[in-house]
Length: 288
Ligand SMILES: Nc1nc(=O)c2c([nH]1)NC[C@@H]1CN(c3ccc(C(=O)N[C@@H](CCC(=O)O)C(=O)O)cc3)C=[N+]21
Ligand SMILES: [Mg+2]
Image (tube, rainbow, N blue to C red; front, top):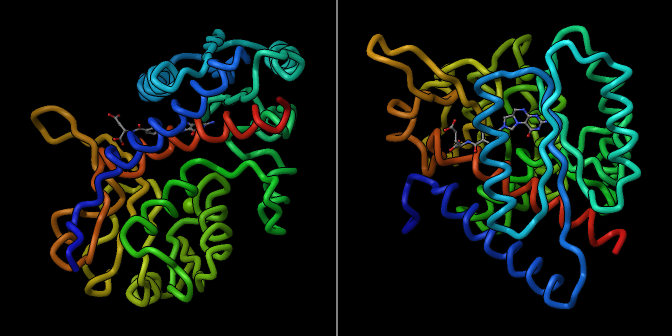
């Protein structure tokens, strides 16, 4: 393989953002309004702060209007739902993202259901989850798993018949990743904390997607030589002399075995944001 081992998610995301920027420029040159994204954040979580700033910066690069709503930690559910109702009605806003996790007193399920499915650029609303499940092209698709598929295709091209093992069964990554790879005609296995033989199943993967939120949990004993490894985890760990970001995969141990592997940072993270901009443009195009 001529492919470099390290998959450069930052470069691929840059290319995607540049393409989105061109499409947006073509719209605004015709005198149309730009697409608009509202990011709602409750309380201040320093990690969320970094992501939200990245999202806003990327929107600016793409010519997408972004609006940030920062609400107090003690915001009531009623107030948050009221804001969502007004954003649902706002003709300048095509996409709404409520940054997770939310403070404990707010019920995530009820809040995510209040976002209009047409503006649900995270793809977390049950309507979009259902559309994805039945393979309906109108689904707004979760951004991180969509990025995983793009990265796998970048290395392998057509994915038909590949065996994908997804480690982690969350609603935001694992389950939708399984659906998206299935839609690419892959065979899909889901491994999770109750799996009897996770590493053994993972070793059968042509493409191994890891989204568990446990720093460096996956080592070389989980990886078939030559497999494509996609690391969704972003964990800040203490090194004794400061902190650093690591994935759910032990990169140093897995890279020599893998055919290709995403780094953290610079792998899946930037693709998530590119996916968000892409969904915002898709939501815009559905109404304009
Ligand atoms: N409703 C909702 N939707 C989300 O999509 C969502 C969320 N809530 N809550 C938090 C997680 C996390 N997330 C990331 C986005 C970009 C990077 C990213 O750009 N990472 C860069 C930089 C990382 C850094 O320097 O901290 C990288 O991996 O290279 C990471 C993580 C979106 N999330
Ligand atoms: Mg999980």
